Image (cartoon, one colour):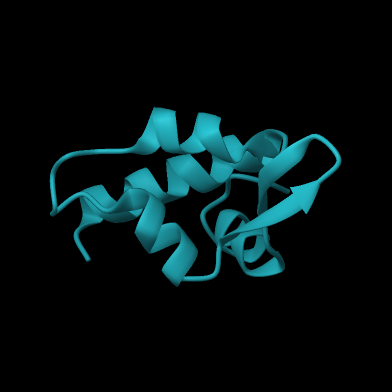
Length: 77
């Protein structure tokens, strides 16, 4: 993993931590055509975010591991 990729994963997790986001919004915002920038996939693979069905539809939420990741990098208290 590169520092750039790690920083972008951190940004994604922080953005989702502000409020659970609709899955479609996350994919639209964070998709990329570059096979070397797999930010969404990296965050899911690392267990930082998860998709959950809700009454409003499929939502993306930060996991406990994601919250720990944010705390370790000074993004949440």
